[in-house]
Image (tube, rainbow, N blue to C red; front, top):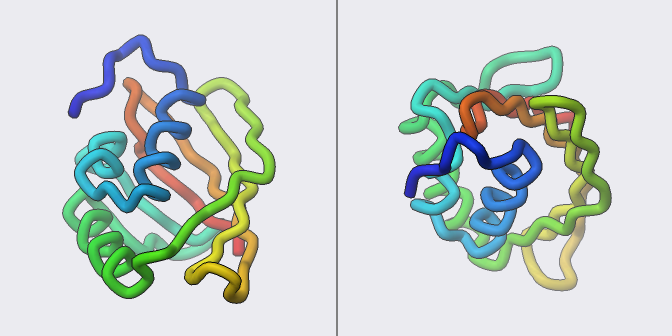
Length: 116
């Protein structure tokens, strides 16, 4: 799946968010650039490149097959999208909040920084 160049940063993040919650790995990865990176806010890169991002999510989806994120708030400023999410690994289980700061270029996610 290739995203058209005219898709907005909001739409890119929304579509990957939906694919994440559906645990649709191929659709999820389709919204990331080949050179995308995931990192801790002001910290280390935790996944570098689409292969590492794919491997991370293969494990996540296998370990937590009922994992879901609830969007609490979304802010879009230019090519940056900031989501405040509440994640539950299992229905009725403990939750945790995360802020995901997405940087978009050419209708693809090129970086995500997580604040936990």
